[in-house]
Length: 260
Image 1 (tube, rainbow, N blue to C red):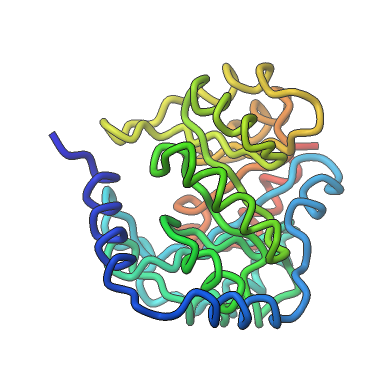
Image 2: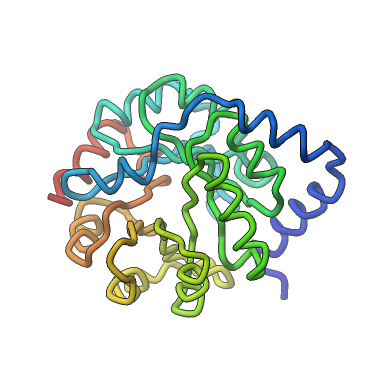
């Protein structure tokens, strides 16, 4: 039975196969992009628990969350609340995002920005750098070992931080094998789409020193943030509960306060 991730990846891999742009030209454009803002450094240097606040219009499981959001205004609200970084969905078909959302959000604040998308090819990494992202997401479950290693190395060569997303111990080993220093634990099961709030806590002590740890999905409020901070996480990545919050700045501030 195909999972939601299978369907999304099939769509992205088809798009990658149909992309006939010259990689050498994309690499030139990416290399010429302005300096990045340093997402990993911002998280490592945060006081208390950092918050990666997400610009997210919709999700495959919940449908529309905030389809008419203003990315620049929301980014400014997140920054005012004390967010450490931003995450911006750029997948159009499944999440309603776009590169334009990322550009607008980054232009509305001074925070480092993660391009949240399904990276499957070198061109995707180049595109992230060209559109202004400071970091790229690499989902271990979506990539084989060679792809994970190659895309992680390319991100570093282009000045991008790479957040390697894992779901279990085996994927953690794969992340460590490519010398990832920024690892996100997604608490959402990719088959059932259910959230396991013990997943991140279980995996935290298995990560060696030097890894900047990020907990993703299922962070509903300050209590969850406090638990993850106590487990040793540097940051939480939060989307749904913030974009649907009546006061996003206050929502971020509450998470930051709980993590102290």
